[in-house]
Image (cartoon, rainbow, N blue to C red; front, side, top):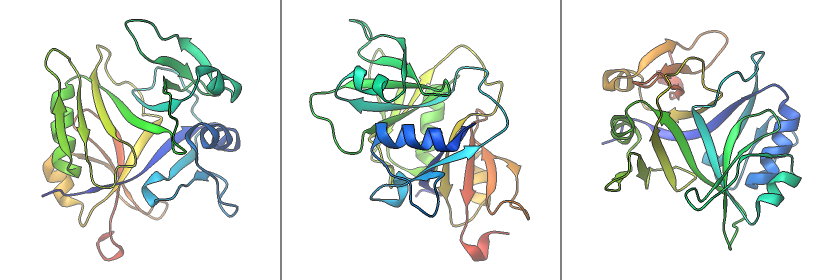
Amino acid sequence: MTIARFKDLCVDVSSPSEMVAFWGRVIGLTAPADNPNVLVGDAPEKTIWMCKVPETKTVKNRVHLDLITGAIEDLEREGAKVLIPASEDQQWTVMTDPEGGEFCGFVRDTVPAYRLMELIVDSAEPEKQARWWAGVVGGDFMSRPGTPYFWLENVPGLPFRYWVFVPVPEPKTVKNRVHWDVTAPALQPVLDAGATLLRPKDDEIGWHVCADPEGNEFCVFLPPEESS
């Protein structure tokens, strides 16, 4: 039994209008006329909020998106830059968005209209992280012998195929610029599972800001009667 459900994604940005335009084009989402700082698709879970923040990017993002594309040049024409080209040992291209945020492009012969393929989370202990999130939001815990990464599939509501946790040596030092939101019937089961409450709902925000066991921020949205 899960205790929360994936809701949407949020990206901290300096220029919402520029980033909405870029990510909308490369993923295949649109911004509604009445809210130009958010991208939406044909399901609520495909929503991506572009949240203006005063902090600029200073370190490698510990959370990033992987996209499907017909050609890396297509992403470059939209404003992305190649950071690490694909090679025989690495079948993807590491790129940066217009504000320097890392993401990866995977070239495929068939390109869907909605091109977000997976969410990647850098982790000190990726197996524990994947199992923890499987316990919170459900889905199938997956691994492959001989590989150090772990992932989730078939997560209820997840608007992309894979949620991947990969090992990195460096610790988390700053707030993630990409995070996810969840909905939950109540906050306490999320905290009992091992999350930390960073900021409760208050007069300024209508959600609870939490962190998972490795400090990755996520927001918990409760039903109106349970929001206090």
